[in-house]
Image (cartoon, rainbow, N blue to C red; front, side, top):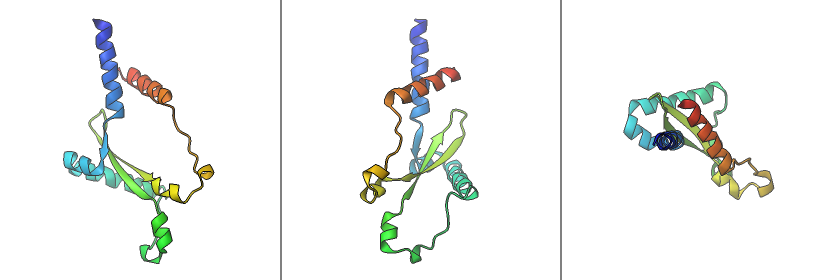
Length: 125
């Protein structure tokens, strides 16, 4: 039926939006130089926006090195076929050092996430 097809298409669009992100290593294996260029572009943007600073690793104490957040690099294949790099910080190591009351972060509800994804997918169809 027609409504079954439109529901199937909508579901397919939602899953394509949500689940097309991958690790940098997998992205490089799959997309080669396009993925490397996307990661470079993301790092350049972070540098241009002064999000990242220069720190001499040798001057950091062992405690500072242990508490430092690691960058997580991801690759996203966009619907247009372009490859986009994304970088975020892995905050898991901070959990050992930051009191729970200070580490609060707003979290989206599953219902809110699905509503947003469904709205985006519907607007694209």
